[in-house]
Structures are given as C-alpha cells and as structure tokens.
Image 1 (spheres, rainbow, N blue to C red):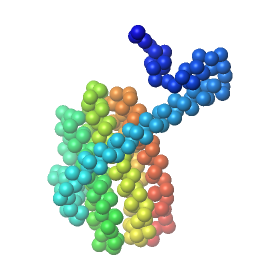
Image 2 (cartoon, rainbow, N blue to C red):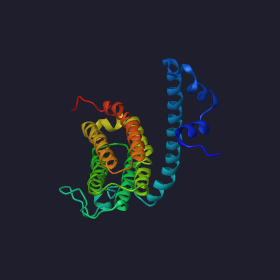
Image 3 (cartoon, helix red, strand yellow):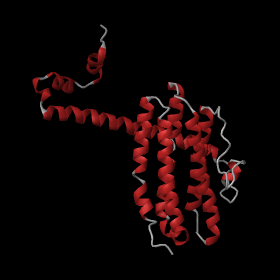
Image 4 (cartoon, rainbow, N blue to C red):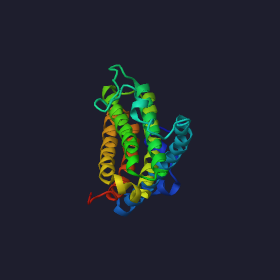
Length: 252
C-alpha cells in the first residue's frame, strides 16, 4: 500500500506516541503543541550535531593534506599563494567567468591560511620580530576571504549539485576557525604583549568577512544549503566576542 503526502511521511517516521498526540482532540492545546514542537526541535538539533561531526571528520582528512610541506615562516604569506597579490592590490585578478571550482579552491586556500596561522600562534614566543610574520599571515586570510566574496558575487544561482559542493567546503572550515579562536584565546597574554590592538582589529575584520562571505554565498545556494550555511555561521559567530574581549585596551 502506497502512502502519499506529508501525512503518510509522518506515519512512517514519527514514533507512535507523537502520532497519537497529533490526532487527539487535545492536540490544539498549548501543552500538546509545545510537546510536538519540542520533539521536532530535538530532532533538528540531533541532525545538525551529526552533520557537524561528519564535516569535522572530513576537515581533518582533507585540509591537512594541503599543508604537507607547508612551512610556517615569512614565506607563508599571501604573496606566495597569490603571486599577483601585493599590499596595494591584495586580491587576485578575478576572472569574470569564474566558476564554482575557483570558489572551492579559494575556500580550501582559506583553510590552509587559517591552519598556518593557528600553528604559528601555537608555537609562538612573541617578540617584536614576530610581528611581521603575524601581519603577513593574518593578511593572507583577509585577502583570501576578499577573493572569495568577489568570486561568489560573480556567480549566478547554483544548481543543487554545485550548491552542495560549495556548502560542504564552506561548513568544513568551521572546526578550523573554532580551533584558531581557541589557540588565540589561550595565547592571549602572549599575543597581547606586543600585538594587542592589531589582533583586536583583525579579529573584528575576520568576523565581518565571515559574515559577508556567508551572505554572498547564501544568495546563490539552494534553500536547504543556505539554511545549513547560515546555521554554521551563527554557531561560529557566537565564539568571537569572548576572544575579541581579551584584546580590548588600554593600548600602549
């Protein structure tokens, strides 16, 4: 027997107690509606947890392979990964016929840039001589995000397959951002000694760039992918304020 419509789907996937509650005369009462809402809210949260876990594992597999042989040094700057980038013109020349593959390549480069800065700060004994290295690596992340924003602005509405590819490569970066913020927070006293205001300002810019890149990407994603990308950004954005607060003044 074939079951059609949302009612049939509900009969197949919902537990019996929820089905009975939805059919009962008390289903219109506030308490019953709250129980139904709580059930679906819990299911959605559980689904996001599973998705985030899968993307985290995928990140650990994909991104480290891009870092093999990548030294943490003055050479790991934006000028190395984008030969045409200069301090006055940080963006790569954007092809007006840019495609999804170019945007995904930039997303992967952002992951490499973030992990490079993460490793540098983790091992850093900050002195004034270390400041140019931090400046070049934070600038590399900013420039890559600016490039991504410019690329996505040139793309039209994506088909479901391309949308899923962009979304997957966007969401898998979340664990790298989270770990970078964790390392910066743990090293706040060391970094703040010589790089306090600069780090405060860069973290604010980083947060804004992540918002802009999410907005421009969501404009071309199919609705379910845009919802997932928005949810991932929302979780990420809440991690910024306590880290930024660690670098508030007074500045010397």
